[in-house]
Image 1: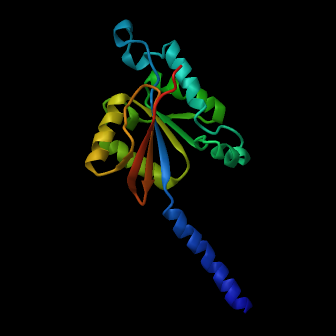
Image 2: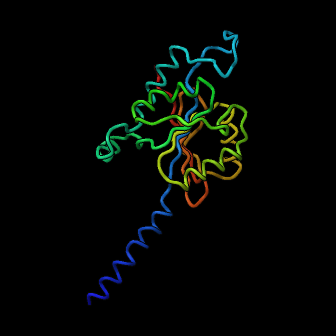
Image 3: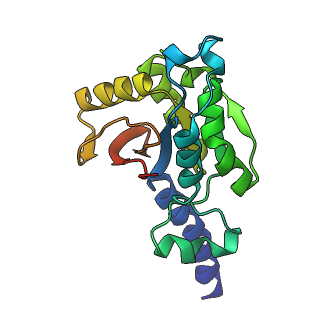
Length: 195
């Protein structure tokens, strides 16, 4: 009997591993917060900073996520907070980096700059990266530009991805992409806070 018991114990981790493979992974795509108007900025567009409202939006972004110690996560999730980020990635544009800065400080994480998040980036390349991040697990939060998000939405609509409600790409908003078995299965939009 003990041999059967130990055999069934060996089977249990495999079952867990198989169920974990089927568990959806969410990637949180943030559109950068409100920046100074292009026409009011004479230096490089990559250096264009957030305006006062944008700084408030960046601070408000922190409130959407669990930023407490790991042991506090289950309590906060019950109250509706998004899970604690494990990876922060951003376009190199100052307005994107500044949008994630308060969240980075709250979570104690660095911000990794990535070319696939740059303005004008290809949606298909973006989605390949999202699928790779999902395969790695964790809670990635990506900050990019409105044109990239709208292109991604177009590709996902054409692919038949399920959208939970309408999607916009307002500054400071979050688009949640749920990936399962290597495919983006659904998307949900969280509008920016009114600040």
